[in-house]
Length: 285
Image (cartoon, rainbow, N blue to C red; front, side, top):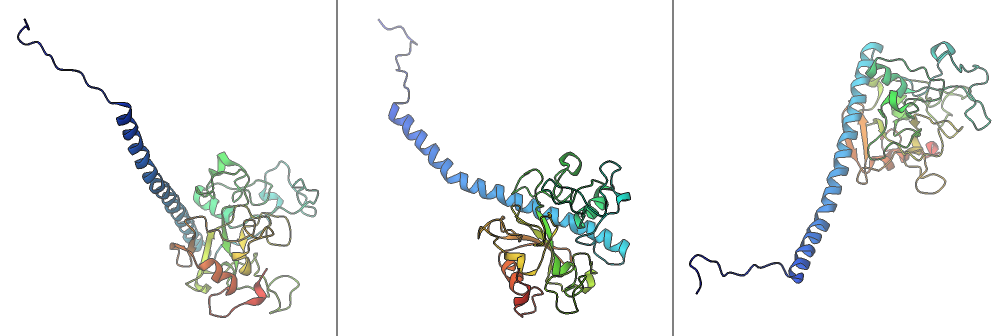
């Protein structure tokens, strides 16, 4: 006799086929969502990069106010008194960078902007120490793009576009007769008022650049005219040029200090350095 209130129901569980169906559905959803999550992550890195360029713009605005509208030079040589007391270079022979060819210590715009942002002097006796992130704890990867990541002493993830930065100072280089130089002078800094509004000042740089300014082995802080889209010796990745690492495009900071992403400007600058509609063949690297 069955007692009242006793349950006679059976306990059910998932079958193997049902479990496989559920796992397949979950795997399908993950495969659909992962590309979207990856794109969102890369988009966030691009937005962070544009925000960093805007910070550069704010530092430039501060420098402009104190210098009468001028830009810091793309390249300059600090005096021995401006470097740390230890390992001071001989100005005549420079610093041996390990390749057997001593060179003078060179600084650039990044070293100046770092001082304006962090209110701290840069005195490392090595070329472009801030741009190359030679002291990661001190410089805090300030010039390192998140889409590239920290690669140690990189050649710099951001560089200035020299024809704009120096207001087309072709012919001003030492030893050149007026009008015959095909390279802008990195030691000459323009005022922003003399720069065409459409021209970029700073942009994403190729972190695998195999060279500096084409004349030595320095890690330079600028890109000149035809170099903007220069592929390099391997035909693809190691040129001293702007980079399209953000979804096929490049982030730039322009003359009016606004930042924008662009996919065509890199190749345009390599053909027409001042964007006046004239192809400047003589500026090719």
